[in-house]
Amino acid sequence: MGGTFDPIHNGHLRTALEIQQWLGVEQVALMPSKAPVHRKQPERSGQQRLDMVRLAVADERALVADDREVTSAEASYTVLTLESFRRELGENVPICMILGMDAYLSLPQWDRWQELLNLCHIVVVKRPGWIYEPCDQMQQLSQQHEVDDIDTMLQFPSGHVIFRELTPLGISATQIRALIRAGFSPRYLIPDAVWDYIKHNKLYDYEQPTEGK
Image (cartoon, rainbow, N blue to C red; front, side, top):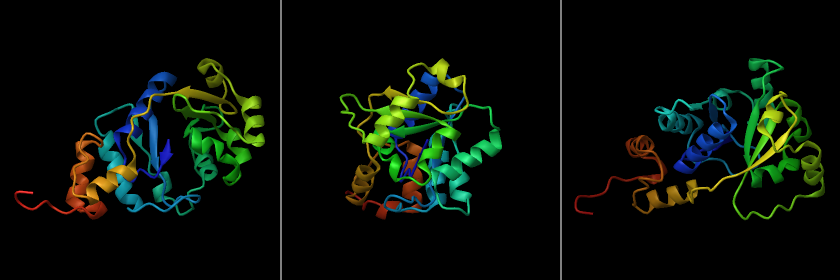
């Protein structure tokens, strides 16, 4: 499960944990991107965002921080990341990439996007009430590759798309950064360890409140 995680928050963590439990896999890897290719660049460095992910998952064995994009000399193209996983895990181990519906529908804009299902399965997380309006390319992709059974999917190392409806927490990293800049606490939206890290390193223009404020 990739993302900028700028910063990581409880919405990310809850989604990852629910998917881990639903799939019945040992772990979900949370992987900060170093420099996203198709979106605005993160405010904080890759190392800082990786540090926050590590702190966030430190007490949860089902989630793990993965540093491969942050430490890679290559740009953060998903296809390169998946090729890295394949070299590490071999050709026969199922790999599942978790995407939100927005990201899934934008796949035709991604580099070498038509190769992704040769390398992994795609788990698409959709919000309740989402209106699914794919372009022709994505409609065809879904029709050719969609399955609705986890066991069927995991019999193969790659090649399938499965949709999962989750009830997301209404939290965004943009909201958290705005709270911090306004001098408000984002506690209970992010793990306490991440909030402590932000305060200690004065991230997102954090300033220590003056006495009596």
